[in-house]
Length: 255
Length: 305
Image 1: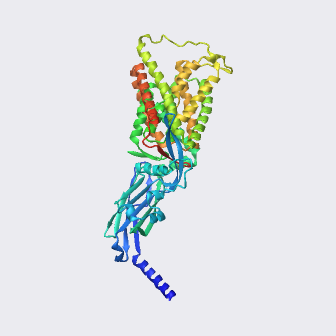
Image 2: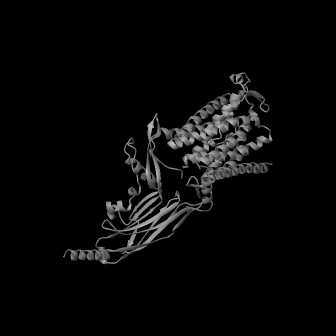
Image 3: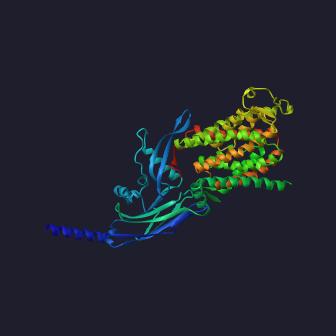
């Protein structure tokens, strides 16, 4: 009897999974962003569709969360204090991982679309994207350092929270656009989308966006880091040539 | 038109940079100064990271000094021997400066060091210039009455003497080497040529004739700033070539116009103007250090870019 019951439950569970299974597909207006010499930001369009397999699932409204993140890196956060009449960096906390760019666009307030457990599991909100293992014991109020990184990068347009920026039509088609600022750092960015309902993630999709310097920007950056001596000499050669030619040109103009 | 700077990793208006280069160029042409001590703080104000500003400015000064020294070589107003001795000190100083710079960068105190150096030196130089030019304005009718005489001072008592024919001096190499070291350290830390310290030191401490002072100082500055550029480029990767080119295009053109304008204005009024400007930049930097910043936290990357 117990085995039959178990089988029944398993079947029911599978059935239920099938009933509520949702799929989500997404597309991006571009998969590559080239930072050229005249790069002044970029706009990326994220769009897609929800494939609902059963109407039952629509009793609760669906939510869509679009999250675009740069690769995460360690960041040193320093806090100034007044010493000897001037403001000096005193305490510092190393944040282990933080994206240099992070945008979360949603169909509504994130807290309503997603419960804490799901946020923790998928690292969706800005706070969850930043990982700080621990500040030294000597530092007061270490939480302020994590808050500072969020605040500073929000002010620079690097962290964006865009509730209501995603439009979802008839619970099927969604789209949003995210503006990437000019002070973008290169790397393999990820675009993630989550379909949520009643605080739970029903489906998710992920894709990469390649952000990289191109052309002369790429060449100069690589040269500066891989062959710094050559780069330094080239900088000097340009400077000396510019200095010499300016003197020569104006000598001709004056005479 | 915005341009993305590959090393600074910020996007800046290209015309703003050309304009800044031009304005500082005009001023440097008018007053016969390198302009590094004005340009570097201006770069801080527009949001260029201080480490990049200092390293890139060193590169730009190579261009403006080279442009300036050519005329002096032609007029034979460069004391190569004295320049060489100053240069020995300068290279040692630049090496020390970059070492201090990198050490404090690791501690997160480099911005403070650079800004404090600016406040102190701009404050001193600005006040001295201001007082002296005010005095000169009131004594304008008695020009040239107080020529410095060649007196025997403690400088002449030092050992390892050398003859400098172009300057007409027979003095110890210790003072010029020491001056070279001091200016080298400042060049590396502040991203300046150091002419504003070198020139008075050459006149008042070494007793060099005024006509060879500017050429010799420029000659020396080229090599010290070139060496500083190389050190910053190979240890910090902070020389931004795109930024340097934009600044120096504006700078070299501006300098030529500045020379023309400078020739038409009265020297004392020019000096008061320059002194006022130096003091304003100094006051702005000091103000930022003293007043509670709107954001007391700041971020920096770990392990380069």
